[in-house]
Length: 240
Image (cartoon, rainbow, N blue to C red; front, side):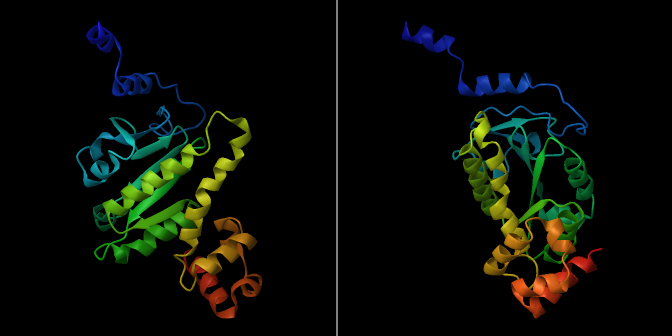
């Protein structure tokens, strides 16, 4: 009897696959492949290319991970509206092909893209270029990691923070934008001369990267002083 009941009860993996296959059609002007994945609550949907990787192995066991074809250009979907684009050391060394993926996600109105980049001794010389393109040109959040192990911890943390704000509660939807704040803080800390304290002060005065990038030296000076203000202004203007 118990055996028959168990046989009739679908596994959680089977339920997840069924939900993935019943994804709703894309809406609006979303690029093909972006924002088209339905993510069951408590799961992360990963591109099939990550199966067997160190990153996937580190994530599995901490959160539920399901692999799916056709989720490009995003590598990991945290929810229906939030995805991670992962740029490896090899991607940076190989050239600028990763930029097309970033632009596709940036142009997708119904998807928030978070960019994770491997910043290693080998890829460090290429990091400023991807940082300026991602942060300054596209206005996206960029999070550097030293390894796939560190990236796995970051992804788990992101998923846990998303779970704190249930999607079905209409009173909490606006608060979901707070998810990016700690990662925006880390992004601003990548600017030369800016540490955690100064980054916090800057974001209080200039809440977005666009506002910070458009700020003049006289506007920056009262917040961080003349020397750092000049460094920040130079960082943004040199990228234009």
